[in-house]
Length: 244
Ligand SMILES: *[C@@H]1O[C@H](CO)[C@@H](O)[C@H](O)[C@H]1NC(C)=O
Ligand SMILES: *[C@@H]1O[C@H](CO)[C@@H](O)[C@H](O)[C@H]1NC(C)=O
Ligand SMILES: *[C@@H]1O[C@H](CO)[C@@H](O)[C@H](O)[C@H]1NC(C)=O
Ligand SMILES: *[C@@H]1O[C@H](CO)[C@@H](O)[C@H](O)[C@H]1NC(C)=O
Image (cartoon, rainbow, N blue to C red; front, side, top):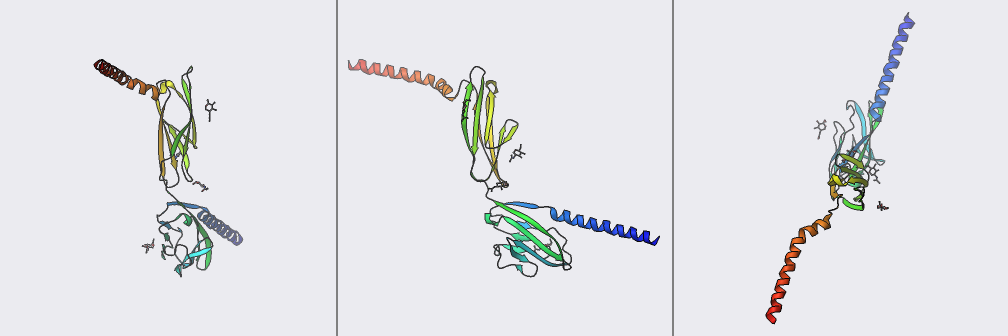
């Protein structure tokens, strides 16, 4: 009878222990990634309970950059632009540069016992400032079947992802191959380049019909050409007659 109750308490403890362990694993396995622009400020928060913390340090690239007892370390690459909050151990880094990207590891003890480290990955990006360049690589017209095939290419500097939008359709990648019909009229192709902190777009309008730009220009200029022709004809005729 007594053995049974002990067994019950024992099992209960095991389950509780398992739950605590699992809970810890869950809390520590989440990999945090933070994206920031060059020049911005980041607040790196461990997100752990702050009671009874006996030791706490932030490490970056194998160096202790801040700690509970020393504050911001003199060896830290961010020593002039960082602060440590000694209440919740949030590390603030200002005026970020590309080289600040990396893993920030928070190591701490509660009642002189280690608890799982927290890793926060910081990625600092240059914002995209220029519009992407849009080029028509190939355009061919199938006169008999009244459709056109177009191959477009979008380019940009830096590490960006490409998105194309044609009407309500989207596609990723730097190149777009599209087939359009004559009756579609003008079609707008939009290329959007983006990284985690910014985006820029460029667009191109293409038409698949016989009256391309050159033709419409001649149509518009036609009355003018005739006007000039007659103007010069009559003027020269006049001068010619006067000389005689
Ligand atoms: C430190 O963090 C605590 C708790 O989040 C906050 O109340 C306090 O204002 C912070 N101190 C500073 C100097 O930012
Ligand atoms: C351009 O299109 C024509 C006709 O479809 C094709 O023969 C040619 O290979 C294409 N060129 C490129 C660079 O894709
Ligand atoms: C480019 O950006 C992607 C997504 O932001 C990232 O996963 C990749 O590591 C970057 N590559 C380089 C060479 O920076
Ligand atoms: C790019 O396209 C994908 C797929 O359609 C979409 O999930 C994503 O949000 C788009 N990104 C941008 C920056 O528009």
